[in-house]
Amino acid sequence: MDRRQNPPDYDVLIVGAGPVGLTLANLLGKRGHRVAVLERWEQPYARPRAVHFDDETARVLAEAGVADAMRTIGQPAELYEWRNADGQCLLRFDWSGIGRSGWPVATMFHQPDLERALADAAALEVSVTLLTGTTVTGVDDDGDGVTVAVDGPDGETTFRASWVVGCDGANSTVRDHLGTTVTDLGFHYDWLIVDVIPHEQRPWNPTNLQVCDPARPTTAVSGGLGRRRWEFMRLPSETVEELASEDTAWALLEPWGVTRDNALMDRHVVYTFEARYAERWRSGRLLIAGDAAHLMPPFAGQGMCSGIRDAANLAWKLDLVLRDVAGADLLDTYTRERKAHVQHAIGMSVQLGKVICVSDPAAAAERDAFMIGNGADPARALPALPPSTLTDGLLHRDLSGAPSSGVGVATFQPRLATGSHVGPLDDVLGPVFVVAATADPRGFLSAGQLARLDELGAAVLHLTPEVDVDGGVLAHLAESGHIGFVLRPDHYLFATFGAADDIATAVGDLLDQVPAPVRELDPQRR
Image (cartoon, rainbow, N blue to C red; front, side):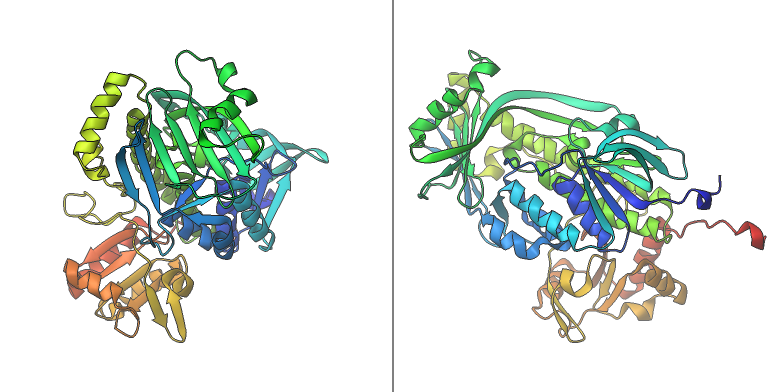
């Protein structure tokens, strides 16, 4: 079938208007693509859910158009402590300061505020359409595009899209149509989540606390500006129904000095914390992201963060495919990269959960002694985990075919100057490939390589003290023994090189891994 006879209504149709779906929509809209977001609920969900994001997530959200809003909806988290029932410190996580990505290391926030900011940003993108009260009833991928049947405010209709991304949560309709299996890691604990708004603000020391009390493991953290979040684990002697009652919630809050007289209970609900992930995140023209692709316990604060990373990874790859400068095979790297990366986040969350969810007093005492003996240092007191880096996918390879040493890490955000524009890398260059070196890369790349980089929209930088205005990049290169690097549009390190003669090799490897699509000849010109 000639796809010109059935052109798509949208380049990308996103199912689900949560943080992941809206972030992806904005990232694609800013690249000029026609995007529709289908949300089954007529009004945004007004209750809190996620309460934390990290600096890398903040960097992506800023690119999605909510940089100014983040400064008003979030509260930087300075410290996260774990204490035992006697108040002794078991672990201390220092979250103070600005992270490598140029934003606070950790931010506590109110999810409805973030979703409102993302929706407002989407409304400013002329190519993004948000359709609420619209339920997906059918998905048909015919190879040339996807037809999506919906039941909306005006009745039943269909939309045609080049690609469909399911950001529609743990019970994803798109995942069902994609047909993947889901791996369950067997972590299942029921917790009561209670969000409150105190009538008057008061200090909490520490602001973010995990109480590892075998009699009742409890979380007490900021829920964003003017809000507090408590989480209470269900005990073996309790039923879910007993724990879920409002009276139970108030009774559990009372020892914290929180009562009906001094606070408003915004939400109370029992969640089952789980750890699972889909094996395939793409089938044909269908993809999934966020909770549709993975679930994890909240103890590392990486659930929403992982979904936002999905959106960042997918946005630039869809952009290249939609601009017809890369083949659709590029999207196969999405599952390979993100599934391995999210398995690290899930593993970390589960390990933390196994420490927290101890209800046996003897086992808890043994745990406490070990952690106190290791100085409350997470690096010494927690199980060793592999670093959170990309280990597969679009990365520079050594002669054995394995990713080169040091690649796959999320890079820091320096301040740069190009012409009269001075500012953070993201503001100056945007989310593009970057080839940068202390020797001008243009002098070591062929005309064909430069033309292909231009087609991809890459920035080619000669790193001088005038360009690296704070000197951070040049200092890092000198310390590591490199003269330059190649960055991906999602700010992950594709390659480093130690000599000018290696620039062409690294760029050549990039271009081999992102080949131009094989374009069909127009039948009328054959």
